[in-house]
Image (tube, rainbow, N blue to C red):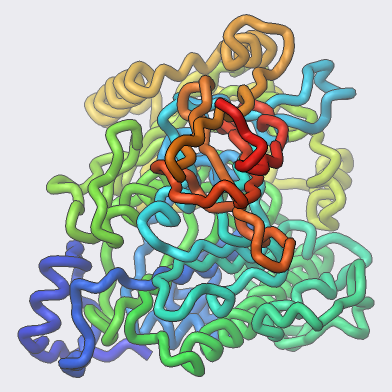
Length: 588
């Protein structure tokens, strides 16, 4: 529970807030006095723990929804800062995760179409990957180069294959506990129970979710597939009353999906608690910055994939060491493109020039808060639309590039949700009301404007209201500026986009093989493909290679008896072949 009195922080807290974790909080509760720890150097690199759930709107008590208790997330919020104005760049996971991984808008790197390497039989397009500029690296690789142990457990889904150098480990067993002693870590844990598929029938959790309770134990084996409904954990009475959004019918089918949604959240919260307990048991809580957020908005129809707040807005909580700024709310606008520069800033590095976001925390926090966030919707699986959006703290402007198309498009994956089937059935029976029918209109306006504070479900289009002419012109101008700035051409056909990404070639480009120079006990590795990440492994004395690829950055001192593996990979290109080299046989 958030309290109402603010205590005066001590000097150490003030220094840390100003120098490392500064942000613009609005006080909404008590900030407890941080305990001084003279044994801890506040300038040391903080650990970063990311707790990422899927398809997550503001359905939890810290953000005002009391439907289901979430004791672990509520504790995290009471000890941390809540951020209600965080927005994904797309209403679906892979484009949004591309933005997080690179600090670039998906529409600027060819990551905007969901499932770039799938649905080829339906689209007639070749499988491809997003291709960022040559200097772009995944944020995890940048942190590795800064000494961090980077683990991902275990979903990736970036619209491109991650280079071998991206992670120290990325698997269902990945954990900070596998790092070297005293090495700072960036550990990501993904929770998939809240995913849209958790609403499908037959309903049941996936057994693999139990991995979060096992702390990366490589001896633990789980069953494959989903649990039966009888095996599935139940955290919420099935007769619970739910607040149904006005664009969905209030009937038994929808209420059952709402029960599933909240029950899944409660199970996710329990899994979050297991990870947090592991952190506390390891004595790492007070030198770790903990982030919790969703990969975009909620899973229900007219939420996920859409560019309304129901698809883009996700709750975020950050707990800082020593509970700094505990019980406060930060109202600033934050985009997913801001995450990568913020991670660099928190770990003592200046955000890189190519990053299109801005740091909202840390030593290199941007001097100016955001005035706008931006979003896009293009192809989702087998159906395509072209929509762009810009939002300030109150208003959202939407530009529809295919107004002749309706909003609803028949996407087969989504139609596995019982609520979606129910909507289609009631539509065909002409039993939906005017609000519920909005999504099923045969066409849409070229422009839309919504007052998101007065109209949070974005149902009342103000674009043609003269009273808002100044606001819509402001947001039109901002959208035009953004499109030009990131070189987004919304109406470019996807086939032309692929050709552009591949430099006019018919096939995906391939990273050239690394070149080796060995002289006077030093090995230098280069790659002719500009921007390629180079990885290497040095064979151990027992004849085995390490599990993890090291990131090559400078010549290595090795004896001529050494044996190494080398690999090169530019994001969006096919990786080079991995080569094994015995230095004593190597001749320049």
